[in-house]
Length: 385
Image 1 (spheres, one colour):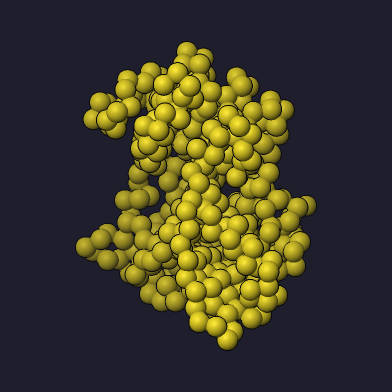
Image 2 (cartoon, rainbow, N blue to C red):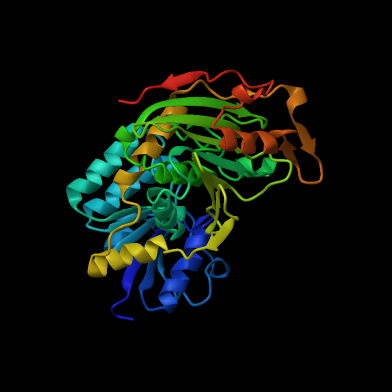
């Protein structure tokens, strides 16, 4: 086990439990060793998956990195804490897997990315969908002209979250907390993968690939942030990227990204690594792909120089979308008649939203353009510089 890379996990509850299980999987392979856990309240024995030993626990992230001699830190903490924790690790020479979204604003993202670049440590941003082997496969299909000339990329996410989802943490569903940006909306956090994956397939990954962003941000829940929203991104590739999302679906389904060509389309269900190629004159072709784990990729990068899959630079375009959402007017509450409460599930649904989400991805149109009576025409057009 001596060659295993020592890791500290910051934020081991909530989504952090997934990281604990993943670290356990990689520890079983002899690749990593969980050396420490940073939490405000230490994990109990019951909260720690079996087989992870007795990692050191502390609420002091910097001190824990020192005492464990960690080589890698996984940061899965509230969004507003990402930049400071990432820079704390980087300045100690500790490499990083930083959960998405990397930061709540473009300025904080730049502070994080520039600071990390100065230290020379490696940083991977946790967009797991970009580790799918389907991504390069789809890019190859596009380049080979499988669906003709590419006309745009759509993304659709129709998910459901109970009202309790917004009570799970003080920052949940907030745009700001104690004067600090949070920007915990449908497009920037739970369905951020749809935005990042659509941009990646369009070839629009860097900040200067984004030329304009139109937003329609709404909410059925009693929150600050959006739970039903869509965005259209103008790109240097001269193809629009439109992503529609809701956490108020009637029948929640797998999110997907669809690449439109003038002779067909490619649909990618990114959580399942499943791809459907549909083109004129041929039967549909469905494929499933493997996936490279981003923490494993980071460790391989440190050991043998394997290219990082999601370096901070390739999340610049995503962060331009986050910034446009941050600067947009606060999400408009849906009129009372536009949503209803499902008492058994204690969640709010927007009748007809599932079809609207799919139609936006299909036609590259915004909710207002599709005739949604409650959607104002895009209320902001942020031109990125």
